[in-house]
Image 1 (cartoon, chains in turn green, orange):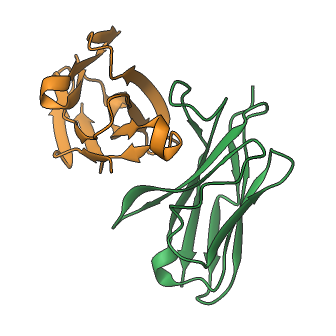
Image 2: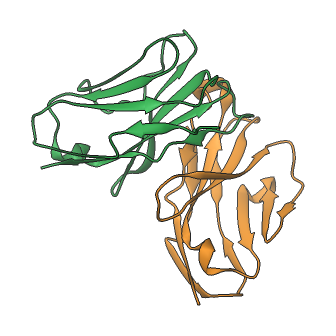
Image 3: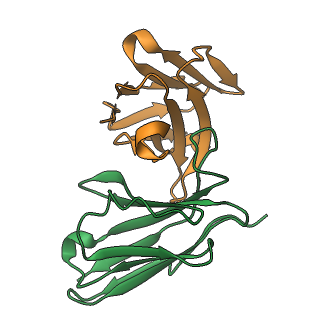
Length: 115
Length: 116
């Protein structure tokens, strides 16, 4: 079946602009995660959603970052007033449920470049 | 807090050599899960294996094998008879359910290059 998809695959934006990154999880997966992969920080957790529960936003690096998940499926990660340090690959993953006994399936990522 | 360390930043081998990727982890939790993911040049992270903290049995899957030792907090990954297609970045990761919602804490990754 279809895997996790993300769009756009690449995004170049000017410093100060807002961007939206989209994630379509695997159908039926209730848990959804966002991670960021950058040269300086490696792979780091940003936020997760589980069903209709309140998301865990503890990994978001600043209040310029926000995310939502509509209808328990598609998720959007929004970065406001982008900065050059936001340049990274943003990865989305989904899992059957929020439990480490179920592996996380990753999407191909969105490469964000802030100029 | 959890931490994963992959001390080897880059490894280069010749095809058919065996290679071991090291992973050392830190956690105070008694129940935890360890993972290995592969990231080929295409960029997508591919799940390889998951082990829980109560199962120290080594595992073998084809040319891949994993050695989990709680006494040294290590979860090493060995590729036997390496092939060019094994070239990728390999990440070790740790997950603890109770306090962090199954989020993955990743090591820095090891870039493996297998030369023909």
